[in-house]
Image (cartoon, rainbow, N blue to C red):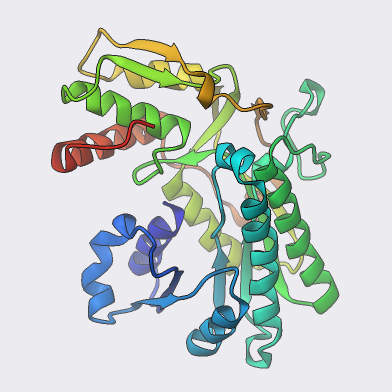
Length: 326
């Protein structure tokens, strides 16, 4: 989701050449609208490899010679990390080290500006007296995914300090919008509602924990923040919380989606498999540090984000008809 929106932003607002690093068997749905540019090598190029294959990363750096690197790739679904902790740790920690080693080994990339994307999940279970969460809040990760992002976060700062690399690390709080993967709460809710409206799912939305508090931002605001991060006086080794300004529980978010549905007979059912063993249930950030440094502010409302997400799934359901129920 994020990489595709970042590509859209950069195409519209810069004259940069854009290289996307991808595996040969990746799902390219989110960049389908860029196929013409990719096929014609018109500013957008794909380089095939894998975070866990260091040789492919060395070749990637040699062929692209980037001025800016946005490291967004990860095993990014917390729920999956409980089932596949080793793969999550390998991809997110060792994969990050592989990227940074590949950059460090190329002397002509000494001035590359690098964004390492950690996660608000590093803070995990935060006590109420620590809300809103500031950058110096203690890490208390609540999933193997969150633990892997602690490693990602620390690696970014370590390489900046040890090797004087131009790296900034972000802890982005919940961000969503069109193209959001259907395993994430707000997106699976929107997908299920769209399937119910289309008459291909019974009027039941299956959910997990609805009590967790989240601060919501739009992915299009997020990628604008990432661009500002690397272009407005980047400070080596700095780390920032980034997030929206609107907070509500997962249940309140679902209530809003249901309120804009064309159906008024939808039942909500908690499904045991959707519950995490433990949850990061108070995700409310203080973003003053980043805002004061860059001037960034959110521009897209929670309501617009959710409407756009639901319309995205309505379009896909109409045109693709059948999806896994998850």
